[in-house]
Length: 57
Image (tube, rainbow, N blue to C red; front, side):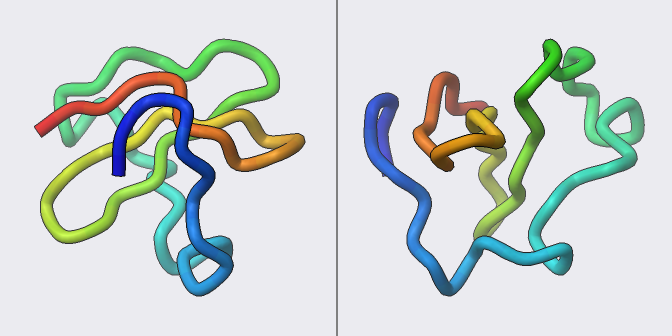
């Protein structure tokens, strides 16, 4: 998955949302966005449409 892609529906649930972003050495998500962790990578996505804005290893 790359910037501009939409997170697949199978990953759009609380199981993949990263609430403890500090423990993963991520920056705080700006308003209207959240981190999603999938297979060891982290994606900053827009909450409204699940489009990836940033990718972190």
